[in-house]
Length: 333
Image (cartoon, rainbow, N blue to C red):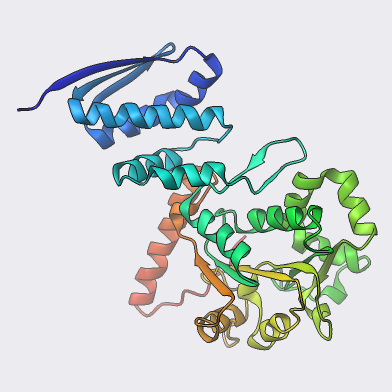
């Protein structure tokens, strides 16, 4: 026999309520569909009606979401779905581990935490290994989290400098033909890395660290012949390296250093006949100790929910074209 239950939750804090009821109560609608109950929000009151056990589960989810809001964790529809899935599976501890894992703070004092399981595995892998590969689509936070960990390591004196590296091939331009000095030529390619560091340090400290040589930016070609000791080195867009380039880069690793190599193997901008060094390295180094590999999925996208839907649509299209003998070699912005 199904026992029906009606439950009301009053959220007295208006700011907390505004987060829970965000986007026309879409989070409540997602919960209602998931648990098969009637759930509505009016003013500061949430009202649930349905199967006793389903309402009970939904109440626990609402309380978890309220706690996350109080802890300054930004909600999204994907976040709500993750909370429901983990709580349904009895894995609430994983949510607590993610909440407690403050990687760093932004200059404005906001805590930076892993927001998905993939992000948590990635952060843990970087801490555990000397070299970590982060593979996955745009919007999964690979670059931002690596930069946050690098900034923490520099502040904590675990390393003496942060080195940002990126192959300069996306626009099909050779660096020598771009205007300006070396720094000006490289800057457009390193914008995502800069944005993260500016978040951590603010513009003044960032400039000071650059001038002291504690933050260094360089195109991949400039790594040849160097040994990178006591450094946190981030290679972004690694799918656009050749086999020779990534081998050269990886063998620059020195003592007390960490390397993070990020890329998206579905977005290769190399000429069709050139093999991606990232794909080759993942194959060759799969079983090597002290080298971690973390593969992100669309579930780890932390931008607007629509970004994940776009990524999914393109991945489906690529799969269909591959099945029909088409090329999956594409460009991206």
